[in-house]
Length: 292
Image 1 (cartoon, one colour):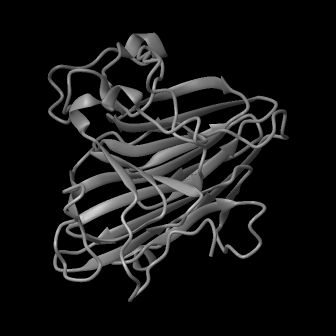
Image 2: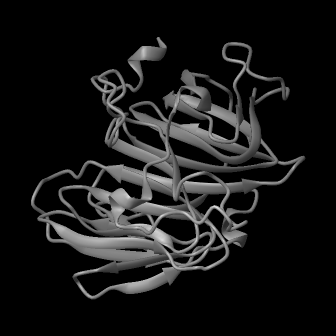
């Protein structure tokens, strides 16, 4: 089916373009907490795992990271892998004309906005904000002990000035165990069954692959995908005999990513926690030009 990453048992391998984005080339941001209205860090608090309140891996240009050769990949404009320490967060701030999806990896994320939404999401949950005409919102880790890790994904909407909206889903651990779980879909895709829909020709999938298992990834012709290794490690294998694909030798570790342009059909191994943003192919925005 067009626009779907899926698990299939037996199809032939055609490996298209796969470009690895190692975590060593990502921007690592550790801003001053006072700039965001947070209190200063308590150096005597053993729960702090980095020197600042927030540690982010920026996959694309964002905030202080400005790389003209790394603006977006198709409609994917932002992917930030955030580690937020206890009782810290992003205070009220405005967003506009973006589909903002957040996947909670571990800990708890509390979302509040001016539309009256106020909820705390646990690991495996996903939320999405249609910023559209403009929305004021905040995201916090209200836990006093445990850090929060979440993946922020910003997608370009198919039109500007949309009415702001909010949606969330608690996630489903069983649905993502050793298979792709479709968590976000295009509102115009009538065949998709997800709790969260967005105003963009894109889909988001997650999978937790146990060691010894393989999950198949297909990106069809005319589509592209950005694959993030959230945790663990994974290798991409040939469909037929289980060998690592000789044209790429693709192996991903935690925080690594890959830009994929279809047609691509391959199997991925565990143990790993993976996220895929799949979207329409745009030949004018094929990702990081500085890695060519």
